[in-house]
Image 1 (cartoon, rainbow, N blue to C red):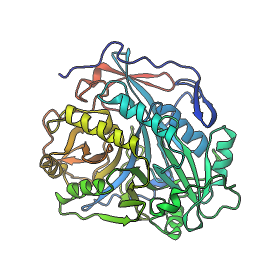
Image 2: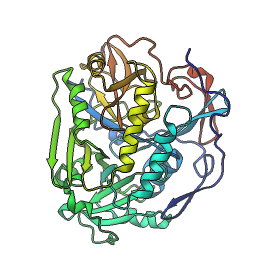
Image 3: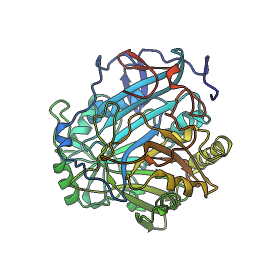
Image 4: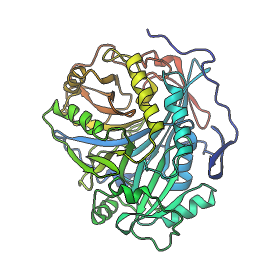
Length: 467
């Protein structure tokens, strides 16, 4: 058994008021304050009616974005109170009921896309990946590059709601006469964006120079007609409970010192199957932008509320963008990239071993069942600057009847970026010591049954795979 975290490696979480600085003060309650007594999982019967059980064929789909965060609960609270996104998970993991190992939360959008926030207190690099970088980034970025972009028919309701909870935000005129609302996540230190068609009810409060210098980094890859149709297909509209429009995911973006690094890695993964990717590259004086596009798949959740099927009918593609800005001060990004590379080399030298906190900031992809992950692992082993570790999944995507293989995920980091991917699929021959990821082990391998999970209501359960 691997070494375990124990003792006072991290301060225990305490209930109480947390003051978050978002330009103006935004006060939220602590772990066991303002949330309802229970957090029922989403059912979204209307969404399930648009799914199909048809088996995939050579398809790579996207289902989530995970951020490292100094306060996962606060991020989920802002998404819920300011943007109407349902919180489907908010909990912390303790070793033997005492030492705090991790905190995490998850939110859900219109089409089953999930946004996760995670903080580790024990894995290598957790101070850099989960705390120092977000704080430095948030303090430095006055001209934001949104990490997640959503479409909605209007941004004015979100502006009114954010103003009502004293959260800072900005509204700008975007490309193609779009209106863009940007708000910063307090724990993750990154920005999220809602774009809408010209919104006469939304007061323009800011002008971002980078949108003129590097317009491709902010432009929509699908037409408004495509997004309107997708929004209607998934039953988008104003939610009766929140009074806010539904949000449809459009893209996830990260800054990079090398915009080619992400598509280069993704091509490595796809090449193991002879699969091709939809990649667009745009070069300008101020920036290089690469955009890799994926079909959507509904995320699985504990309890199986979302079965992990491809969405049908196919509506729009979601872009994973890398933006290399040549006119920006990239000192923070360079520091983070170097810290991630060092953490990977120190802690994940051998394939299928070790862990570090930089893996916790990732995009979630799903390989179709006819693309067993074994082939991708072979490709990763042949790349000296690719670091990876596989685990069984406690709540895997649903797989078609008769599918052979063991469901799991591989977390992968690669040269050139401090970001990562989680690729979920099936293994024909699972790696040695294939186990569910243990948040209380510095190497991610351990005995989950020694852990205690505490949710926001204060209810506890034993560790191990979710029910």
